[in-house]
Image (cartoon, rainbow, N blue to C red; front, side, top):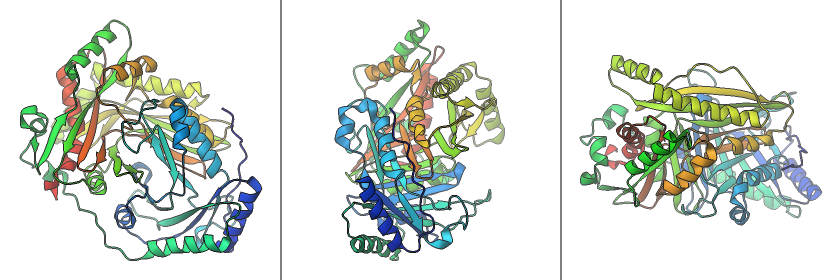
Length: 524
């Protein structure tokens, strides 16, 4: 689908907020459409998650993103514009096109400015973070919404966004910034806009008491008297802290579904399919999603911690090790990067044993074959959109707190294109063979047929883009859907021709561990 490629450069040297407002109204009149005004200022050094907890109001949107590899944290609240849900549900298979149109409509025409000391004098582009679009997509392009509040696609521009970055390898933090957004219409009164924005700033500047719970160390977590195998044993469904667990099952046990998949693969019907299990964990009190996320980000600091909440009393959160697509504009095109993460084995508290486990994974024919399928699926998708791939390096180990994976970074360049083409790349990549299968269409059909619990947004793209032409979307795994006192958590295993049921079951158990430990209130 061809979109208008007209780009308006951000305003980076405003004389005042009042000047920005006048320019924004003039632009809205000229384009005959609402446009986004983003005003950024320096902010105080506070924990962004604690800030989000303190400033969030019931019924508001909220979003959190902590990306250690890039040294970036985003915390955002409220909403000034979002995607049209009705249009999404009419044609869910076009959800990436809808996302592209939304970003084109609001980001390419945004009026962006801020405090003078945030702008590099004489630079072509200032250091302002720009306007951000946040959100994600469902896994399947179906028109049913099994997760309340999470349609096929939901992207939004927040009312406010706090951004914090690291400036060196030692983890030193730059000065945080806070961006206030306002949706400006052609007939808006400039004084009303200024009053509204200043009121938002004043509210956010008010002192607050952090509400976050400090998570315990990983060693303390694993000192719990209940082992993971006990937590997953149907005869022992009473968890610590009065939590109850139940696997979501259908007519066929997961073991039988795995065997069916292996049979299909050995008959040559497909090469790989990822089959997910889902557990429902019920607590005696309502969950606090930010509290759960705080535990996850501390227990799994190597992962991307994320949370999406559209003010409907439900939330999706997790700590994922897998980046689907990261992009930035460069030399008139796009620099793209993705990650092949497939093949898993446990960790050990013994350094020697941990090395031996890693070596076993690196030399596993089954896991290396599965990993190669994922690499090939990503590279083929990038070739389809015309990207030029950089040479690949041999797989290495990605060591997380409780599991290690085979990992291959993939980098490519897309020349002579506008950054909005990133949505076309995203549509091609999702789902990779790491969470879907190969061939993709066959695997998706079988997943819909066999998996008992709809994936919702599990294993789907979650992330952000901004008006500077950069963005990142992670794969929403190691994650769960929260509603009141119920949590639905997911884990998947890649099934190939020589998969063994016990090994695949153990792999999902390790992956469930991250959420199950975070859900245990006895960690406080």
